[in-house]
Image 1 (tube, rainbow, N blue to C red):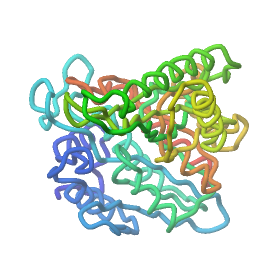
Image 2: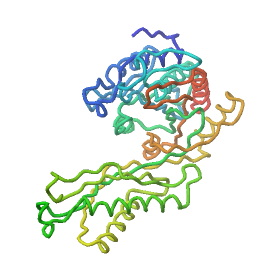
Image 3: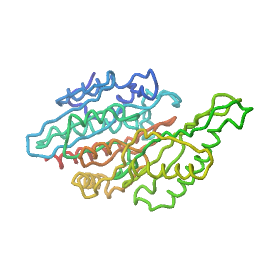
Image 4: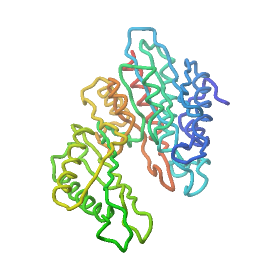
Length: 384
């Protein structure tokens, strides 16, 4: 750890974070996880005078929360960003050797989202030097790329008046994103030798009827009433597994589907749609039998465009950029939904760049600097 109290360059800090391997081991078994980068961020925040909390209910998967206590009577703000990454495999070049070329800082995690983590750390350290009345919390979290255990653990310990998730957003206000819910459907047949069709029921063939129904379900969703930022919900078949050998009728066929949801849709409402489709197949397709299990659900997110934190970020971004920032929705899920579910008004706002999860990944240097300035101004306004 070489940071000092005057080392507040967000671009240099982004490069430091990119150089630390932090691949999520739930995605890549045997990967190092977040322990090393958590230690670095905790030490960096301590050097800057933050009260540092290390949350590690899962061994080797820590999240760090740095707290700058205000003088009292002001609003509290959480800046939230994840430092775990997807795999290093398949990256074009050395993913842990950050370099700057043509105004881009490249390396695994540079865009998603170590630049956002660096910007919020530096912004909070800069703002901390001013006379703030409210508390500022910097939450550097683990496991967002898999199941968001890190943010869940942070929210069990800390509640604030507002939050900003610094996922990349191209310096635009992200005020909504989709959710999702997974279902496992087992289409049931009857095992028999391939020479005895009178005894067997082909579960895979029966599942074909269900797959056609899923496609038609998706087509109906496309023609539904769209959300103004997100469009309509979607559905697709994700995995399929069935059968034991070529000479046998399969007794079961397992199909996993993912239903992407928009505000107003829930796992319960999706399950009703799914059961209705399956019951229709059972009444119209001979020997069609099924059972289902609901898997992971993550709620969609929609911010109040008039919430104080949204207003302040919009004002600071307008001042920095010389124009009002665009408003966008995202098709993917983020930790914003967890903050909102905890009663914390929030939005997503982050850097420009590209290549998330891809063979080449980068964040623009100018957007890292601009984001840091916007976050610093936001803290000073909101927490005073």
